[in-house]
Amino acid sequence: MQLQILGAAGEVTGSCYLIENAGRRVLLECGLKQGSRRDEQENRADFPFDPKSLDAVILSHAHIDHSGRLPLLVQRGYRGPVYCHRATRDLCRVMLRDSGFLNEKEAMWENRKRERKGLARIEPLYSMADAERSLKYFRGLGYERRQSICPGVEIRLLDAGHILGSAIVEIWLDEGGQRRKIVFSGDLGHHGAPILRDPSPVTEADLVLMESTYGDRRHRGWTETIEEFAEIFAACRAARGNILIPAFAVGRSQELLYLMNRHHREWGLEKWRVFLDSPMAIQATGVYRKYGSLYDREARDLWRNSARRKLLPNLHYMRTTQQSMSLNTIRSGAIIVASSGMCTGGRIKHHLKNNVWRKECHIIVTGFMARGTPGRALVDGARSIRLWGEAIRVAATVHTIGGLSAHADQAGLRKWFGSFEGCPQLILVHGESRAATALQDLLARSDGVDASVAVPLQKIDLLASKPRARGR
Image (cartoon, rainbow, N blue to C red; front, side, top):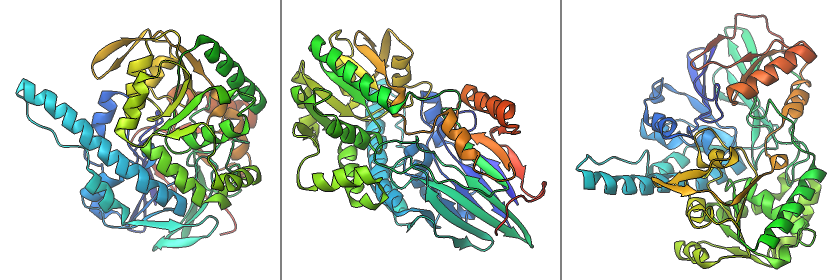
């Protein structure tokens, strides 16, 4: 009975963990590494296991850093089920197809350069067809129902409050009468965040894998965050430029539309044209409408009322490439929400190329930016960023709004772990080293918790310690 850490150790992307129990192998997450070119190249490496040897895959949510290598797993021989929440399954239909499309497009651009240099062509990491094939293995589940996924392994999904369908995963293992329970936090939502409910508490576990993305900081309060948006929009209006908002197509884009609806007059948005320039975000917004039962009460009422009209009177969906390109001629008065959220691809890169060098323009960063991404360079105050090999001067004003994060902050992580009885073994994953270490120190100093920070390829013998979980 063993757990091995295969990703998201000392970093935020590439979530992946292998569980071995009674001759069975279950993969928890199969995420894409994002960040620098070197990080992304590692996605092409062989898996440190034979994909054909797996009995099942469990997926906590649809974000690409958790799901993005699933098409590659199937391409290399996996033929078993992928268990996740039904909303995650539907979002992955959107996200993995889009990921395959982007892979094909990037390979095409790279091959044009290579041909001019007389170099060999490269294949995309995986194609849209590969993504499509992987989707037939998805098995959608609901929250709070415990079920067997293979002999000796049972799971239950609980609401993580991060994005639609995101799950905390409870895993019960049984090998020769020895029983252990693992709880994987997935990505935990920010308490009080718009649209979704707060993360579900869990009380029993022998081992907890907990994310630590923001383990070193506290988010601003919601009231202060709303006021900060109002101030930024007022400053941007005076500057008479455009506003770019890089946003994850799933989760962040829908939250922004929701908040713009609620604060339309307060933020003076009637004086702007708002563009959602992401086909994936537009499709994901349709999935969000389908699962209103997962919302908190306030969001349920708003989305129900907006079903018969647009979320914003001045909102425009930019579905085609031609529509997106038409935004290049707008010099002022546009709020452009576009993906990718870390500015590593997608239409936001084109809008940055057309606006980031203009001093009258503004960029609003509302989410996490991994090391090595153009988005992180903007947050860190870079004077220029590289887009398609060209250095572009940064003259636009960059605003960072930490209070809108979809991740729990240090206090939220501490509170969630505090629900466990008997202080189970805790391993911190999915966080850069500084954030994970800060949370580790706080938990030891304030709560007496002996947490450890995950190490790449680390193996944990689940039978080495006495069981703590009860109520089996």
